[in-house]
Length: 235
Figure 1 (tube, rainbow, N blue to C red):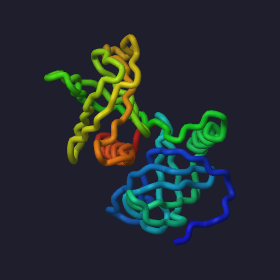
Figure 2 (figure 1 turned 30 degrees about the vertical axis):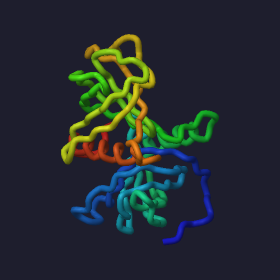
Figure 3 (figure 1 turned 90 degrees about the vertical axis):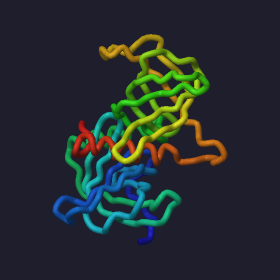
């Protein structure tokens, strides 16, 4: 399929986690595809996926912060990309409640403070091993993740610049990513668990140059979240 040249709606750059599924009743036993958006608009979106979805109606689930937006759409075009395929989807229908969230997000992206990558809120257990400090491992929780970094909650404050290896257990294989502390709260968050919020920035693997670490990590985390919940990310 060729990418269309004419655009009816303004497009905005935005990296959002997206789950693409064959529409209910169209085909059976077709696995979901999990990726990230590149551009978004009122009429559709561009997304990077590990493989091309089949032609026909699809259900798209997007995470906007801690909210889920669901839309029925169709594949408009597809072309190869380094991570899989780049796809264009046109929306066919969206329930009013989801449309309101989507329109508010687009208004923000069209305003003076847009965000290229929007954090994906997700609560999963993690462990943090301090680099250069023997036998220090902290158990905590993941709060959100996006391009370049993540928010974690840990039982003790860490120094700015401290490098840590964050590990997350998933159904397929453990995930580990090296990060550095960018900021930390001075007191525990009021969630009853006595954990302190830390902002971490990713450190790309040595010798590999720039990488889309966020793409693979977010995709794996969404897959784990779907497995644990048994369905779509909850509202």
